Length: 211
Image 1 (cartoon, rainbow, N blue to C red):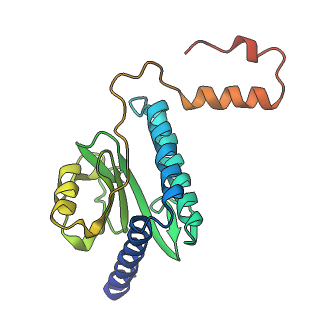
Image 2: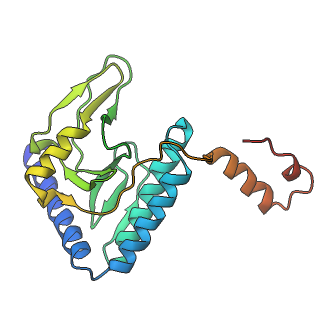
């Protein structure tokens, strides 16, 4: 059983790491690194619209990879975890990453199976469109709510929290998802096409279905 003191210590360490990241980004020392990250996120969200259900998982995973690359380029030690409840580890502290590219609505903190009650206990980085990267953990008083299949937090509550105290906000250019994309890429199609290209397909590549 994890002791309350250990949990609080984890949150303190996570908050300190977030402050260090915020300081480095706002110092402009790594402005070109940050600019590249922003361009990559813009392209990711713009081309793989999360209105397509399968794209949500791919975009979420790609965001984790890109942010990990940004932090490593800024001399932090970041690992991509791919765990059930934690996504990255920064300087030996684990974080969950959540994203909302609409700028509103709900964010799922924990998925629920059956009649179980979910508990949010991870230090979490929220990537919110037109806002930036927000930090929150369960000891900061954000209201949460159980639905039939998830524990959620309202995006507006996170925005209100950082509006009252921007200590927990990194003002990066996180895009909103497009409302009327001329063409939406689909992750599974791109994977299939890439595989056929890698094996130098002679027959299948010419007959991929239209999307």
